[in-house]
Image 1 (cartoon, helix red, strand yellow):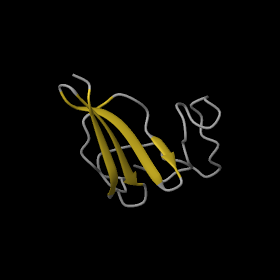
Image 2 (cartoon, rainbow, N blue to C red):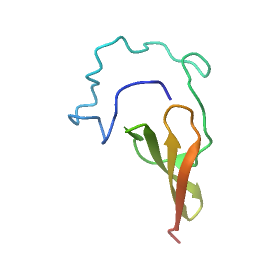
Image 3 (tube, helix red, strand yellow):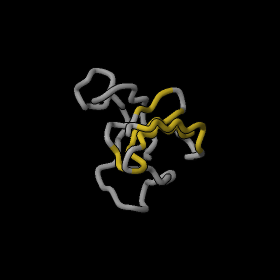
Image 4 (cartoon, rainbow, N blue to C red):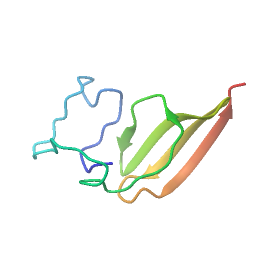
Length: 87
């Protein structure tokens, strides 16, 4: 996760996919440079939400398990996890 403004819905504040951040954002990416933290999640199925210091993801964790995870956006620690059987 890179440090940036809140991204509270799909495609950002204005649903345009364009950040309104005024500072220069990264234009080069790698698995190490600019990475604040990493966490293992299941198969991603939606855009993450970033708001009020939290990052929320949704994923398919196992064949029939849907999972929502909330992380501390600053350090990646798990705040909570909720799993649902979608059998």
